[in-house]
Amino acid sequence: MDPVPKKKKSVSSKQDKSQAGSVKSKKQQPPGEILEQQNSQHDLQIDDHQQHDPFIPPPIQTQVKVCIHHNLPFQFFCEACEDPICQQCTILGPHNTQLHRINRLSDSFKLRCAKIEESIKANLLGKREQLLAQIHRIEYRIEEIKYVKTIIERDARAEFGGVLERLKQSEGQKLAILSHEISELQRDLDKINEVGSQFYDLKEIPDPCPFLLKSRNIYDLIEYMVAKPFKVQIDVYPYDLPRELTELRLQLQRASAQQQLIEFKNEIIWKLLSEKQIDEETIKQELERQASEEINEWSKLVDKFSQELKKQQLVCYYCGCKMEKQYVNSVCAQNRQEQDYDKVFCNEQPPQNYHGTGRHYFADPIL
Picture 1: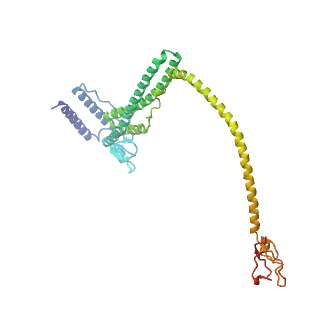
Picture 2 (picture 1 turned 45 degrees about the vertical axis):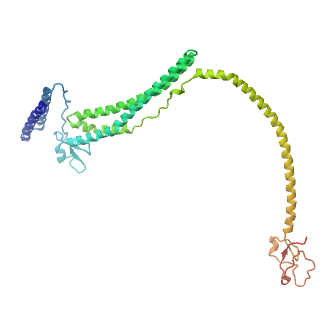
């Protein structure tokens, strides 16, 4: 059997005996002596561990912290206050009410370790992989830019030094932007690694108090790093680097053809302007002719409709007044019983019983 567990058993047995002796003399010894005995027992465990396996680095030595209220070692952890407490704090106060959620140090340590470890594995590691992938993509894009730059530089170096200088400036701007993005991503990546290292370092400390005191900060930092966005789209491209030499060659080849095209366009424009002047005069005369014909047609229509309107206008059979608002409900002076109706103004004759009533009778006039 491996001698390591034997050594641990011997140390644990010594610790159990010392704890049993300390329980018996607890009422007689002050709290300071009790802490000294516990520190000596802890040092004894460290010495036995180092003597057993010298290749294992010694554990981190931490000072045993005691309660500021009762000068006793911590045994519990208040989840509400985020503070480690002793047993007397749960009995005498200040953590002896229902508002305080009390757990053992080991239980709180395990719960928070599991929670932070789950958050790291579920969220932070995925974010770390995304950052690494983005860095690889940017590095590949940098290599593309460098490759395209070398091709263009090979053509430009033979003819123009100024083109080469402007090309280097453009490359420097692009690489500066991409390097800045890599530095931002690397900074986030370093923070993630730092959070993981801090968590596992605190987890390895025998005393859970430092971990419990910093667990909230670690968890908040994890949430911040997970929620922090990073730029996925790479807006810098290698194919918009200046190709002045190629453009200049194309411009020289097109210069003569463009001059001929310009002269041909000038001739077309001159012909169009001449034809436009002739067309404007023709169109003007045609518009004037059509306007005069339209005016004549409208005048004829006005005369025609005025005559039709006269035909449709009604007059009184007895007095000849027109049917207007002021005569409709008035008394007709010519419509009397003793009067002979020799002169009438309408073709239509009213009924016999309508004579002598003093009312107007409107009908179509005699034309």
